[in-house]
Length: 556
Image (spheres, rainbow, N blue to C red):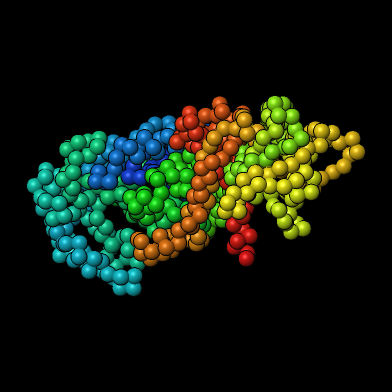
């Protein structure tokens, strides 16, 4: 039986275009500006742009929008390519908007010759005044009625470098009374005496995005220009450019809702402030919403693609709960991540009746969700480490861990009963003493008795020293981007977004771990080995806890 699935509106539009013969193929593009690092919101656009091309056996190009040489850098180009590959997509070609600078310049001349563009010398302040408001029409520039010959001469001289930056611009001649502000004689070229990272000093005039984009799309052969919803009001300009320049097979722009994720900041300006002020360690800080930051934290490309799939493609903007993203990474890592014992806040546990020199090895599953991953060995000895919070001298009834006189289970090993503890001069517990039941190896006793509590442990003699960084959401408010000031959003930083456990003890099996390797630390969450690791001390980042703790906080 043929599988039936619901098509989203982009698929419906593409299939209708193919059916009507508007296009006989599908070609898309992903067009980021190389002036920053890609963030989780870009992942959705990447999945749509590349995914639609894959679905219809088409092609998707990576096209870097390098129309503003002041802000662009090859560092960002390399980072963008790495992120796309990491997500599992491959482009057909790597192209740049600058590849089309000649064609875009010719298009500008075409508009001038048609009387559809003019050189304007209004200052930015005057242009804003002439533009009008949402309720009042604008008024024509005093330079709007220049002759075609004068406009051609001035634009050629602009291109030749005769005029300083900001002295004049080339504007499209459309309608200053249009209800769409983007159609009120928008600027299509400006003067910038800046060297370009690819074209050098060939140009001192550069096209605006709204002019360069439709021309780049069409010259490149893009059939469907898929972009986020904020470009919907720009689509009339997109269509106007292609119609007036006279392309026989223009591209079609289709908009979709962008990804808005709560507790997340994607503004480049605000993210730059976080980096520059040292609030985070860099663009790849595991608390950042950048793809490189999420990769370092331990997110997998599969989890992010799954997240984008679950969100779907919509026409209306909405805010997605961060918990959904965390659920995706939990599900993915639950299936693939090896289990490991890790004691983050250790205290010594001495098994008083266990032989001094005996070391046993217990064989346990690498991952209960995937038996094919086999088993691993953990050591058991007289001296162990357990979590500080797993022992109480006195505890409430619901506390099921170590209390003097109560028998509990050490995960995968023996039943033990706490007998007492040692303290330092400040009253802090330093050592817990217990006895073990020799008949309880592996948790199976002769009398079939059961215990309610199970805790994990690490053999002290075999433990690996590690630093564990407990990362959490960077902000305490759902939408930090709502803050009006560039600095005010910093007032909502989560003070517990990174808690460092500098004296963690890990089971010996992690000694061969590599940067990027992922594990489930039993009872703790999912963790990823960080690039800061050294031979002397490994460093692990918490990707996500075993359960969603924020939903409880929000309901409280």
